Length: 483
Image 1 (cartoon, rainbow, N blue to C red):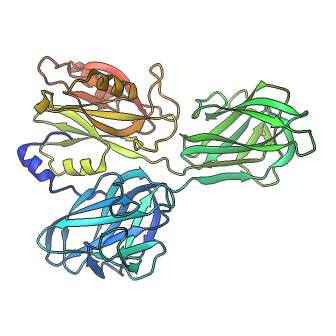
Image 2 (image 1 turned 60 degrees about the horizontal axis):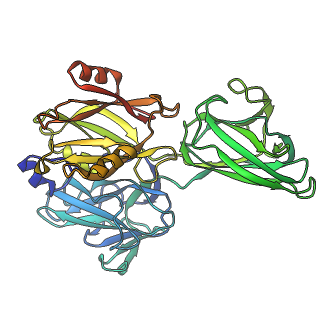
Image 3 (image 1 turned 45 degrees about the vertical axis):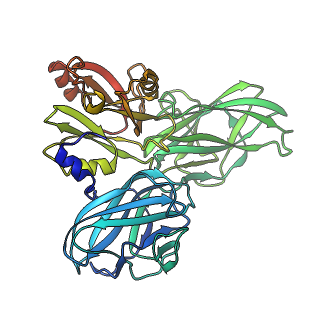
């Protein structure tokens, strides 16, 4: 954790500000009391969700009042399974002013942490302030939402079925195209593309194949962004297919798994085959359904080649890949820069604007857990003054992390993985994550004052070089950056 002044360090225990509501998909919505009213219970009672409906937990919104008006700090902890289960993300502390009759909506940001669909998720809260804190129990019953008498194990006694809340996260993978498979087809030398792809990741692609004779074929499928010469999505897939006698059940539907690789939402995805070994193979007979955004082409030359019509295909992916905003801060006392993708840490630092100033620079990354295929987790090291360090942080790719850990240098304190990004190849970022994140170094190791800055624009990068910082080039790739 980044070092604070003695005043701020003492305040660290007090907690962090509530963040703005998340834009992720609403997974659970259980009606609050009408208007801003609160029909409430003490927050010492617990809450749990059965059959969790998403694949990640980003935030939960609750409504609070207090027995005495004033300033409160409320800490919410989410756990997996029961009230003693593993913590999901990090506990989030909201600093809020509460009244006694009008409820205040508070959103607890938990960082878009992956959760297995169908799991049980529990929530427990504590608060400090001049009085007791209540939450709104709502007015209706809600499936799979339970308030409990307390937070004893395993899940305490159910007090009611439902309470006022909104839970956001990433939905489970969706089927975006489901074009029925017909028999026969064209040679796999012809290409297929999807127009207006509605998701942000590509997971599974199912196609139907036949062959003119029985036997084994080795087939390779490659997905690309935009055109047949676009950047490769994820990893090309190779399978050995065994075909029966033609016309006697010889056709087969094959599912290719691209693992949730990131793609441009509303963009174009192309698919090309390579027959690695064996005789001819036909793919995707004419579909029996209407699929206007699924097109087979004459070949795989040019941008999208010549349209031959729709073909049978089934495609799944995620509407949202799961972004995490990384925020840059400047420490005027140290003249150091610092970035963090941890919502709870951002909320904490924002309480001390005289010590940690937002520069206005942000970029989008993914959570370090459950990130899209092809991205890598970005590790974080802190160099604390107590260990002879420069009171600064270093971020790197897995190879960087392993190299630092291998030195055994006690000055570098490993703080886990902060977020995930793509990395440049030969200095170039992929087409679906084209925005470079540059790293500059102030070259003050001799003064024990080393600090890196991670900038999202060429202008900022060049200005640091003009100030004498060492230009270390583009080290990460993001799909979107903010000014």
